[in-house]
Amino acid sequence: MERVGIFGGTFNPVHCGHIRLARWLIDTAAFDRVWLTLSPENPLKESRPGATDADRRTMLEAACSNQPGISPCFIEFDMPRPSYSIATLRRLKEEFPDCRFELIIGADNWRIFDRWRSSSEIISDFGVTIYPRPGYEVSTPLPQGVRFMADAPVCDISSSEIRRAPQLYNTMLPSGVANYIESAQLYGIPKQQTIE
Image (cartoon, rainbow, N blue to C red; front, side, top):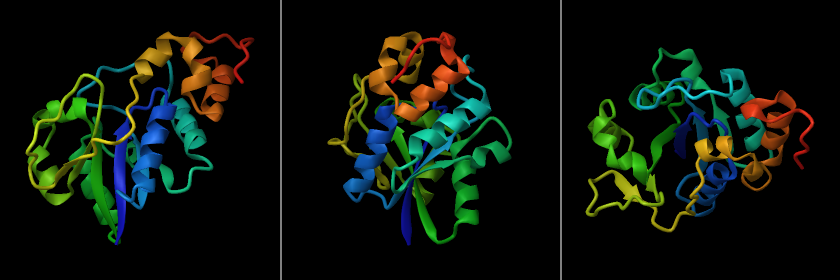
């Protein structure tokens, strides 16, 4: 049975840290595949300006192109909003019975995981993989069904920081994403600005 990690997010925008982590999880055999699952509406986050659902879908497709084992997943766009991870995981299990799904979250989200809908069911029925985030420690021992990938690459840049700092685009965004942002004039980037 193929092991698929579900790495969810608003990806506004998707950046190199997301792709680097997904690649590491595949290369270290933690998962066979990682699906970057785009959330149209996160119940624990306020809405963020700058990019439409269509923009974020296009950027995620661009980021995953030429990345073996890493795929965009848009299943939540066909589901009720807001997006709850337990509903997404149940739907994926139903539609892809030959895959074993596990949730991937950052240490920052693990700190508030008890606020997630059906958090204990996510752990017992699917499992959770935690990756490090700067400033967030993960206490052990962890519940059965939860693992902490302490050696996973740490990215101390967030999507919100990238939106506020266009100078980061050249170094923190996959080239296809940076080019799309420039052409669509997202996040206040003027059309005439050149992004390599």
